[in-house]
Image (cartoon, rainbow, N blue to C red; front, side):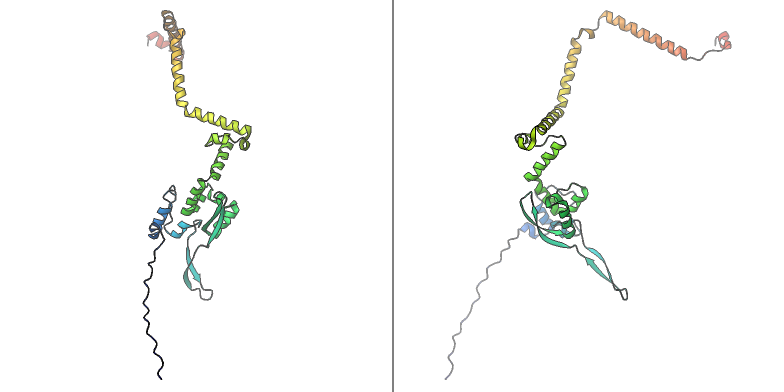
Amino acid sequence: MHPPVRPIIHHFSQPSARCISTTTPALAGSSRAALKYFHHDVPPYPYGPSLLYKQSNFGLYGGARPQFGNKVSERNEIKTRRKWVPNVHEKRLWSAAMNRYVRVKVQARVLRTIDKEGGLDEYLMGDSHARIKELGMKGWRMRWRLMQTGWWKERVKRRRIELGLRPEGVEMVLGDAELLGEEEVDQVEQAKDEEEREDNGGEEVRIMDEERDRIVESDPRTRTDPQMAHESAQTEAQFQEMQEQREGATKPRRSIWQRLTGR
């Protein structure tokens, strides 16, 4: 007997679903387009993006870039070209200002600096020129995000009070007596009064000048009458006479020959 013939089943391939990318078109173009997308609402970075090591624009690299050199053989001193890349890791760092973890690419040296400064927030808010240059585009964007939080605004108020300046939002600070106390409230009020006087300084000077002119015009002692004119003329004549006497005392004495000849 012949074995049973199995029916032929044609398997038609199902049409595959179209793969739809979830990447924003602004990010898929180039690193320049991605920077423009991420920094559209951030003030311009004073040092600009890195053009030699573009991936450092998206992490805390601390200004590090690949180094090039030679690998020298110990036996016959043959040199082979090589390069050293930065030691970069992807970490989750805690931000007390934003109250959440932040995932970022960070170099090992920058990670040690963050631990030394006392956290990510303190590292990002460093005010030295070297620190701002070290942040890069990514650190500059994170720094701007921190400056919008209440943690930084409260810190600025405290700092301005210590310097004797008027903090922003004085009414809100004065309403919290437990945080400030009497002496600090007095300092804030005094700073507010000084700032108002500085703002209105030009207007106050103009008013004072007008008042002085009005008083001078109404004062009888400043009016010109014949007696005052005569006294002023006498004073001027006396001054002129004293001036002539002083000039005569300083003239060189003439010799006897000059006196006889009249020269």
